[in-house]
Length: 113
Image (cartoon, rainbow, N blue to C red; front, side, top):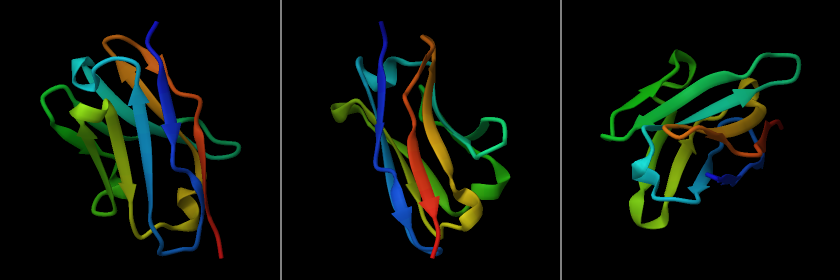
């Protein structure tokens, strides 16, 4: 059974940075794609960024230019570097895979002064 484990969430002031990590129980570049989703209170879970097996990355418009998704194959880890954070980025962030499918347990990100 495939497992994904997130880490790196926390409390940060507006304009600050955080880096989230998603570590897989198998080779991270063997997945069809790895994505980060987020879910704010009272809202539906929404796609934030994706990195495909061939390294192609995509982002939702609200994070373009601020967030970067990347991977380290040697560490079986996908990262989400989040810069210039805003209060509206506050959410639980989840790692997701397809091919095969899996969800992580989520990590809380809170942006507040």
